[in-house]
Image (tube, rainbow, N blue to C red):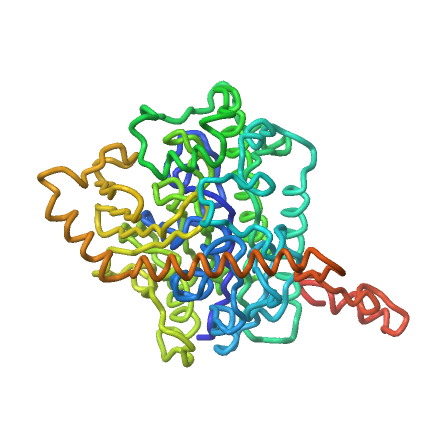
Length: 504
């Protein structure tokens, strides 16, 4: 049997808790529902780092952010880091990227043979945090409460415009794959910006929901919040500018609407697979880079290891994949080895250029058992002055930051993470064991030194690049218009039959 095609569809800032597929009573996600009904839904999947660029870089590399220097949203992703796109090319795949991947630096492909669109965010060092002044807000690019004020519906926004381009380019390329004489399997990533804030939806998606029926977050006493959540609230001005209940309802309404919009693109892409007779030999994977607190704990967006920030959906469907639900803890670090197992049908992998931190989920996806039920995470972005680490093992999650008291949660009994068990006498030995593991696994002081050195260098470089002629790293797609559609050097009678699917 030939290696299957792989279509990986990624959302931005989509928490599984806010999808119908994972049980939300309101949110309509029929395309994800359909994939889960014929495939495997993973119920304890995490990003490795709860911020856009670090999450994506660790996802692509299968390595922790501390191993590749993916500290924050302005950290360069080195061209020397092997990615899943490199390995799949080595395994005989055509590799194509449509949409966001938040690459920072001059390499804007990282193993993909082609990139169909530009990115939605800048590729330079402008968004570098400053741990030398960790308590200061950087107004130009920090999240803020203006985002909640903007929430609502509109006919067009830059995010809608972007995703329309991403979806159209991906559909067009899927047709190309079916029409091409190149018989190599394809690996395509279609990466959308929705439902990322500012929660502005087109009217047809907004109108899917009764505004008065939108559920509100359960917010605990703000004085009881952990220090990092308080820092996030201060950094995004939730504790100063603040927000109203109606802004919360508008924001959640827009988020739900845009989740349905993203889901519709999944459905459109699967339909193209059906129309081009490729569905039966294509593994479809749906995930997101991280989640969104969406008002839980009085916090918004991401940047923490609490469930709605760090959990991601993960659904797989296609040839060889069983129907079911996998409860084992896993993370983005496990995607690369899983794809290698798919590409090689369990045979030898191509030679690896670096050690991988995760394990393959293919055994789970095909209905087997997995003894591993754990993952770990790292965060070194804004709202911090010291690295933050997470271990999720079985039902327990442990979060450590040198500047804060430890956090220990029983996710099974306390899914909203309201009860910190770290100081409970009955959990003292467990908390001590996690603390010891943290100190063994990570050298927090060395990582902090590396983060600050990187930030200082990048701030200096960005300052220099602001002077004189501007040099951009932003990806600029090229089109060969002279060879598109019908041109005079072509035989017109051959163009139509060649571009039809199915062929005459």
